[in-house]
Image 1 (cartoon, rainbow, N blue to C red):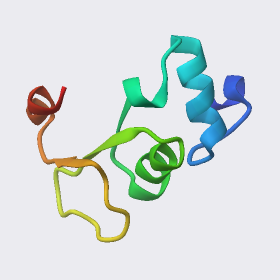
Image 2 (image 1 turned 60 degrees about the vertical axis):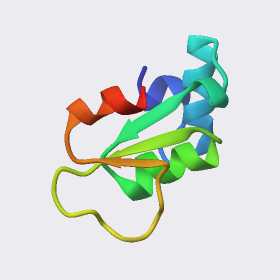
Image 3 (image 1 turned 180 degrees about the horizontal axis):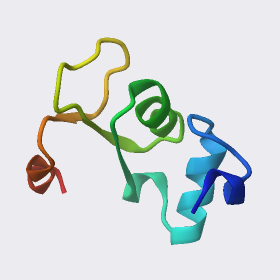
Image 4 (image 1 turned 45 degrees about the vertical axis):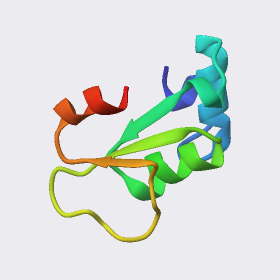
Length: 79
């Protein structure tokens, strides 16, 4: 899936709705894993999804994600 096929860019809710529609899921069944607070995490919040902020370096202040991880192996504890 691309933003062109969705007709929308992150962080707009429409791209998340489009992805959930393609996968036949709801926000409650979905989770966004991203490395950008202002785009990935904020967009997923607006779509009603839980979010995992992948921040291997310094965690940026601002938006508060559902989860924050520093290593992809930490996903096992969430999923």
